[in-house]
Image (cartoon, rainbow over all chains, first blue to last red; front, side):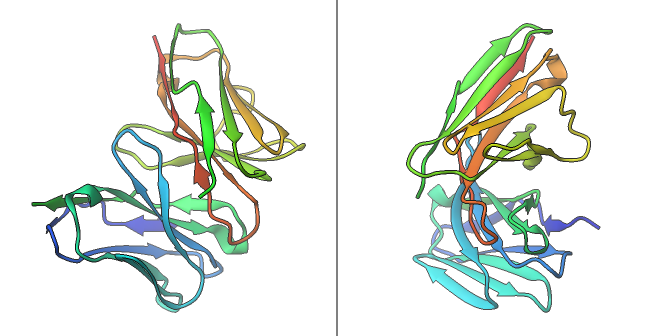
Length: 111
Length: 116
């Protein structure tokens, strides 16, 4: 079982819709969770991080964490074509600051 | 957010030569720096973690004698790919963080290495 799993996609949504990206992890001791966006040929950039169960909102982005079920998700409201990218989920190993990345989900927002 | 630079942004070299990549945190002190490699259409692979002033910790399967990492100061880390071969061609990305449990990473723009 992979430590951090994501559906590789692509996930295709129309412009203006809500895009929902999911990530599951295996280490129950994990306490820090991050979402990064990576455009093709570029390095990742941080979108959001979350540490506590529940929802965390930042503009059009909402991160959701459920430690009991070991999943973290990212919702993108009012999706725009510029949101088309690969979204990487990262989980810090067992309370440390050493990250494990998922393979990423490719998101395509079509006009 | 904090800014991390990398130099060079791309490099082409001949097989057997060594290549050094610099990673600098420009507006914060990066207690910890990470080095990643990414092959086309694949995810980030953590190569090593380095803390300022101490030896890097390499991930399983990464040759420490081939990928030399130096973290000489809180703002500079270097990765040297020694005796590069075509299979080392990849996108190398560094990131910096304060090294605390919850701290996010700030990524450099990456260096694309092509070994002929």
